[in-house]
Length: 197
Image (tube, rainbow, N blue to C red):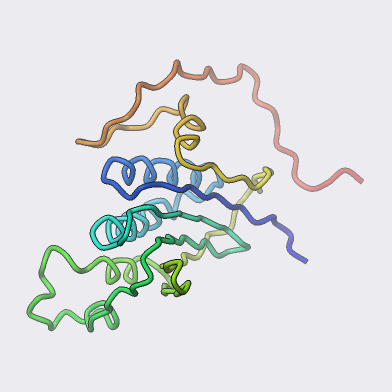
């Protein structure tokens, strides 16, 4: 029996630099809401590398789908694109070796970075429909489970879902003007664990 429900989020986007910054902020907000603050940096770095690969290499288009799923103590982040070509994994990316003279290059290290920040990663071909590149992180135990329904937000709806949330701005990444801040409730409600019997 699974004691905690799985949590799931998905967003479809064009892997353009401005959209990548928005997805970073949205993924960060979801992980914080799921009380996974300790995984934010790793997850955001990994998803940034995967989306950058889609932006640079995917053909015929830059359309992709990012999925984040927490099941028990495993967070899985995946990016699916429409390009059936599999990335070439060199010795540095496959084994983390730095004795290659090109190892200090500023590009071509995306999968090596994903491998360095994650517990595991892989590529799943989807035939002519493209591929999925994924990585996993081990989630720390959660003190208070978050009770919510699994839901997915797609495309422009993702921006609307977080319109009232204040984000710190990153240089060069445009953000729509935030709505008025939502006031905090004057009385906090206690969170009850367990079920009434």
